[in-house]
Image (cartoon, rainbow over the protein chains, first blue to last red):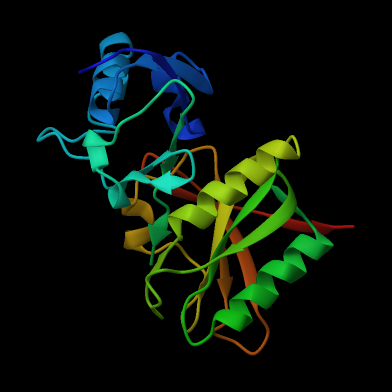
Length: 95
Length: 132
């Protein structure tokens, strides 16, 4: 049973220009995938920045529900509730 | 220009030596071009050639910075045997144009610290000033 509640999503500085300049946005969805679909609907510039064309989490970002990296949860199927905070951060790496 | 507090500068260099033989890495929090806090972060790649910030420690540093009214303004990592210039790998990783990319080279006896901005793949060096 899918419910839809607004969840706070924290946007990293590098993606803020694509999210109306905001540090925190609200999005609706019962799972992370639904949440990001809602976000991209309102901020089309975020398309391909968080989710790849084939529907996977982009390797250049890390996404957390509260303190947990969603790659170790159910990835985009991770359930979210109103009390959760979703954070997006750049995956920082180099040589 | 990047201004680093002396304790931030020293903590960063100490972390780079502690990380040997691997590359060390961490985040700098501050305001604009002023670095107020260094957060050493585990290099989960555990490599002498590449680094990858531990994602959970990154999140913790980001929250701590916010609690202090600061922002993450850059990242440092060490080059253990080469000069402090961003490698192609550094540039490919979709860098934040607002960040300072700090390279600590341990190739010589004394460490050298350099800082760069990376905007649209273009690398520009900036002066580093250590302040009390």
